[in-house]
Image (cartoon, rainbow, N blue to C red):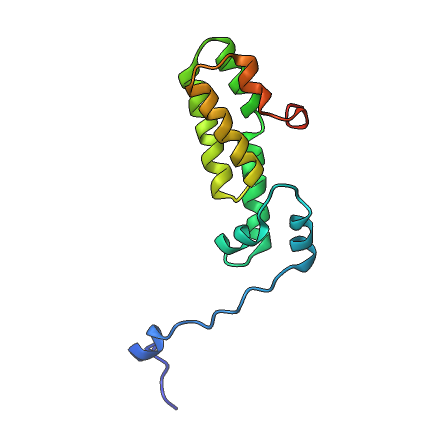
Length: 133
């Protein structure tokens, strides 16, 4: 009997592990497609076809940006346009990265209005009432 030394030839150590193709969770993918203003195909592309990963990123986005409209309103009420612009720009960037087309468009419009020194009421006109809740 040969003694086991734990030695493996270098070729064995360098051989890539088999990578299974991601299984598409059709129920979750369908639920994601029901979300308005979300480009799910693009979102799945950035997560290598994983609806679970895309859903996790969307939950993180929602958690991190849930108070953005309130932060914008507070900054503008204080006359702090640079902070309002920072919040709007952050929202625009994050929503664009996650393929949230409607939020990205609105955040871009909002950011432009903040930069143009528009009146606060004019800035919020771009945001549908449904998003103000």
